[in-house]
Length: 144
Image 1 (cartoon, one colour):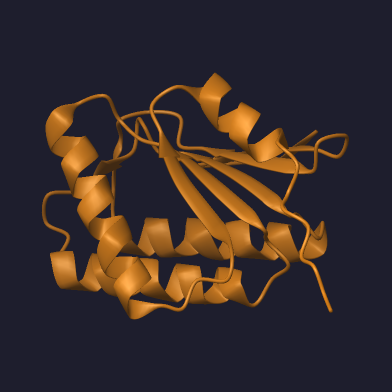
Image 2 (cartoon, rainbow, N blue to C red):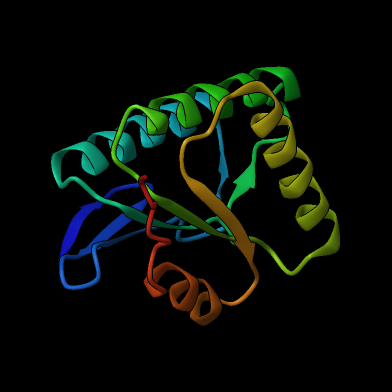
């Protein structure tokens, strides 16, 4: 079921509890657009109590004028907001382009260094692999 479709498309499948977020084109997004979109994404995760997020950013193009430090701050705030939800897994589809792939991995590592992430994260190039990982059983926590 499509939840939102302006700038980003949010599609929620209640059967798998996967919310898919897709940036539909290589339109160079500005920082305010990205911040607004990420806020909508977090609200949807809260409203639908989503446990699994498929973030397809393989086509996401960042406007060249965006300051890298400001963008990193935005990612940190986004991940911090996600830790305040009941999200369990985040699978991110990244570009096959080597330069974009390296940038995504570097940004992701810096975010992990800055924010205590409470959910599992994994990067993928192919959506089918991401869906397989998202739908795999979550580990059972044992208590004594």
